Image 1 (cartoon, rainbow, N blue to C red):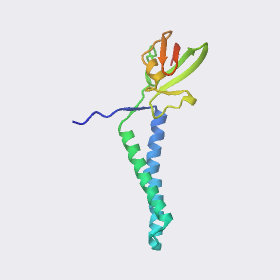
Image 2 (cartoon, rainbow, N blue to C red):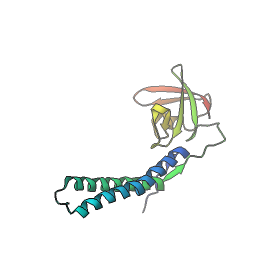
Image 3 (cartoon, rainbow, N blue to C red):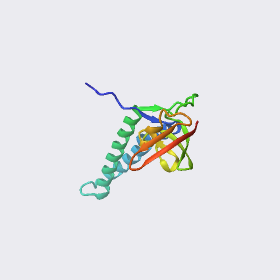
Length: 155
């Protein structure tokens, strides 16, 4: 029995970047490495050629990365912004109060998360705790520290 695939959530911008990266790998990078390998083969100097061995390793790396991106794209699910902002959902931007400070997060999929930019994963402790929360609700997150967030606004 095949297990269901896990959906990976992306914003419109994140999905576009992933698709661009995949196209670049499968066209430009593949063609470039193939030309370089062909050039060395045509010179006939492949035995114990460090550059040739390095190019073959790079070709393998490109293929593995392309296959990984292909699988991610196969399981990608676009985050569609909801008009209903009464509860926090994936794609919501949430303004919270924590320890008398205001903070703002956007809940995104795990591969797009970048906490330094305010993008937190729906799978992170904070992201999980905020999902489904409503305005003015207190949400407690227990990780290494226990922190309480008060939902101020949801966009």
